Structure formats: structure tokens, C-alpha cells
Amino acid sequence: MKVVLFGASGMVGQGVLLECLRDGAVTQVLSVGRSASGRHDAKLTEIVRDNFLDYSDIAPQLAGYDACFFCLGVSSLGMEAERYRHLTYDITLAAATTLARLNPQMTFVYVTGAGTDSTERGRVMWARVKGKTENDLLKLPFRAAYMFRPAAIQPLHGVRSKTGWVQSIYVVTAPLLSWLSRVAPKYVTTTEQMGRAMIKVARDGYKKPVLESEDINSL
Image (tube, rainbow, N blue to C red; front, top):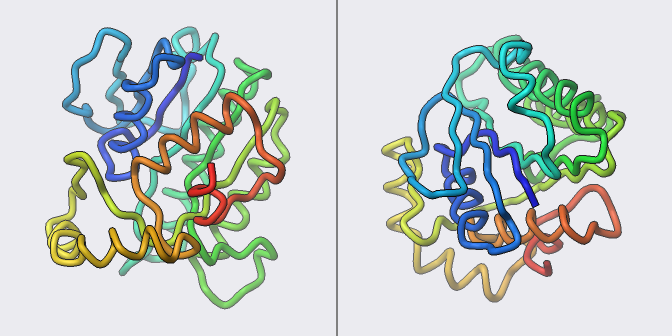
């Protein structure tokens, strides 16, 4: 399986990349992001770029892939609605539309979040934007598309958040998150489980297109 990975330098993306590199069934990984992942592996190729709305300059490099794991995203904390929509909806759909045209047999996996509003009419801005993003991704002509809605995520195997205060919280709460991931899989998953589940749905599919933390952990 050949995989395109967006956002490999973020916390979730780091974990997904690690699992892709560890999995023998994944033969090639193309990482596309704002910065390099810092990892070196024979099956990893990286494209670092600033333009995430137009991929015409690298279209040939994006063709011939079986799956896309889209982990690129931002927090809505302190962000204006228009800016958040641009960074969440516009950027995601630009990449997905390009990939659907180049790879119609591709499986597209999008990392969204628990509480996403599929109706697009709720009171929470980020949830509406995520909901519209999910809905429009599911309309694209991929072989299959899956929306991953994790709640809390525990970073494992050296994966770190790039945001200092967030990483500090993870360090302090690591024992609690580890315990909760075992006893309350509905609310907590790990970066390892995220990566393993993405690979599995890309290979084998899943019974529904929207996966909550409990679904992710069950895979």
C-alpha cells in the first residue's frame, strides 16, 4: 500500500507516520506538510511547501497512491471563524479534490474530532466547520472515505505536541490517559491506535464512514 500523509510533523501525524513506517504492508509514504517530519526512512519521501490550495506543480508526484491520511489541522482556540474555515475546510478540500481526480481508487481518511456537527447548524463554530468538511469529503469520488473523530489522544513512542503548554499537559496527565485508554475507550485513544486503525480501514474498509474513539480503538 502506498500512502500520502498530510501533517506528519503534528502530534497525530507523527504517530501515523511512525505506524506507516513500522508496517510492512505500507511500501511507500509521501509526506506533504509545512515542515519536515525529522524522520529518515527508505520508504519515506517528503514535500515541504507553503501552498496548500493549488497542487498543480506537484500533481505527478501525488498520483499512484492507494490511501491518504489527512492529519493536517489547527486548533480553533482564539481564531476568527473565517480564518479557521480557511485553514480547516478550504485547505482540506483543495487537497482532497486534487487527490480524488488523480487517484479515484484511493481511500481518504480525515482526522476531525469528537463533537463534530454533521448538521452544520449547531452553535459551536469549529464543530460546524468540521461537519461541513466531513460532509463534502464524503461526496468526493474516492473509493472510500472515513472520518476519524477521536476525543482525547495519548501520544506514544516519543510523539510530542509542537505546542509547549499542550505537551506539558500530556506529560502530567500521561498516567491518567494511559489508564483511561484501557478502561474508557469511548473517550481516549492513542497515536499508535490512530495510525493502526487508519492503515486497517485503508486496507479492509469499515462498516460506517464516521469513526468515534471507540471504533478507532476496536480496530
